[in-house]
Structures are given as C-alpha cells and as structure tokens.
Length: 299
Image (cartoon, rainbow, N blue to C red; front, side):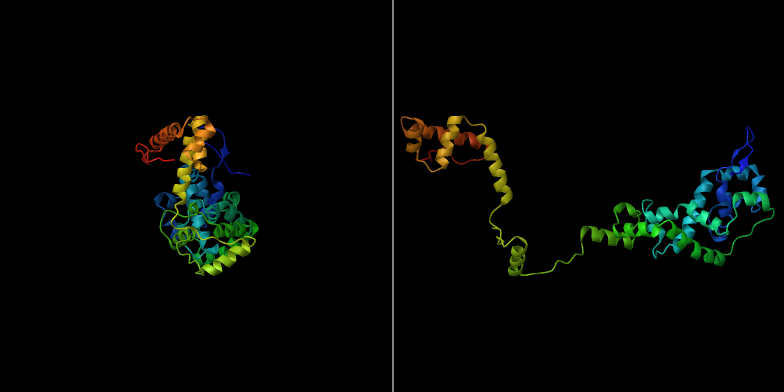
C-alpha cells in the first residue's frame, strides 16, 4: 500500500518517491555530505519528515529521485565486479544502466530485511536515525549486489556487451578502455603474418578448387580500364545502325575496302570519311584527342 499524503488543496494522493526514503537513510554520510544543503536538510527522524511539508515536497522532486539513482549506482558499482571506474561508460552501457536502476537494489535490501519499507518507517520509527557505518554497508553490499546480478541475469547481459562493445558504450572522456576499443575496432595494432608468394599461391589453390592464383599486372589500371569501357559503351548507344556496323567491322580487322564492299559503298573513301566522323564525335564525347582531325587513318 502506498503512503497517502494529504494535500493542502485537495484529497490525499500517493506520496511520490516515498519508496526511496528508507534507502535515503542508508546512504553513508560521506556521500550525502557531497550532495548540497537541500538534500542534507531532510529530517533524520522519519516522523518529522512525514509531517514536514517542505521536506515532503522535496522528496517528491526530481532532484531527490536523481540523488537516489546516482547514490545507488555509486554504492553498488564497486561490487559489480568491474575494476574500472563507472564514469568511463555512457548511459547506453548495460552495466551502467543496471547500476542506475535503484529499484533492483532497494527491493533486495528490503527483502533481506536490511531496509524497512516506507510504511514501516512511517508507523514504527519515532527517533532520529544515525548514519549507517560504511564498514556495515560494505558487508551488506558484498552479499546483496552479486545476488541481484545473478537473480536478474545481469552477468550474462554484461558479458555479451563487453564481448561486443560499441562506440555508444563509452563516455566522451578519454580512458584506457575506450582507447583499447578504438584500436580493436580499427585494427590499428593488428600484425598480419608474413608469408611467401609460393605459400600464398598454395593456400589459394587449396581454397579455390585447384585454381591457380594469377598475380595482377601492376602496369594495368583496372579502374581506368573499366571507366574507359563504360564510356565507350555509352558512346556506342548514340551511333546510327550503319555507323555501328562500320565500327564493329573495323574493330574486327576488316580493311576499308572490305567494309565498303560489305556495306555497299562505291569505294573505301566513303568508309574513311564515316570513320573519321565517328572518331571526331567520340573525341568530343569523351574529351580526348586521338588525331581524327588529321589524315592519320589508312586502310
């Protein structure tokens, strides 16, 4: 049952964030002393808190809830099994997110009888509560945190996240862990084994059904060849059927006289004129100069 709070201008409604009050009294003084005057102004006597309207309003604030979230994470992180600081990770990292879920830890502390419920504090506690000694908190969390992680299978999720990290897992600040991740991601420290060409050729044949590896000709520029061929193909699409026949016959090795005979020209001069026109058109199309303006074409 939630604790109901009688409002100044309306009926009773649930006391927001009241479930975190017992944990507030569990936070050690060393942490609270760093959290500002407002948070330390909450009465240490639960009865005074429940009857202090200003204190109740503060407990219902987002700032109070944020304190609980951050304090819980700061307290449980050292017991989650990581040697590094929590601050190197971002809010997307699974371990960071688990640490910042206070309900997991508070529920286990309550189930184990270490923390009272908010209702029990309201009904049964009428004296001021001192600060829990840090050595005692250490004993409790050494037992509680591993139990919670096992119960909710956090270890399995975190293990997978550590095995397959991503950029979003890390905070913007520099850290050794972040540097190592970036090095692995970009393989900046990978040392490739050195083998002879003969060993590579044998391995290639074994994995390609006996096919021999052909060493590429360094004098050939594959990219330029592919681009040039694509340009030629595009140009061919602009030619007439007769010009295309002339071009194909010439590329097949036919002489000008043979082309003239096959295509019905009176003599080879007509074919020569068409080839020169085709050449000039290609020069203009491709932005090159092969000398078609000059009389360099012979039969």
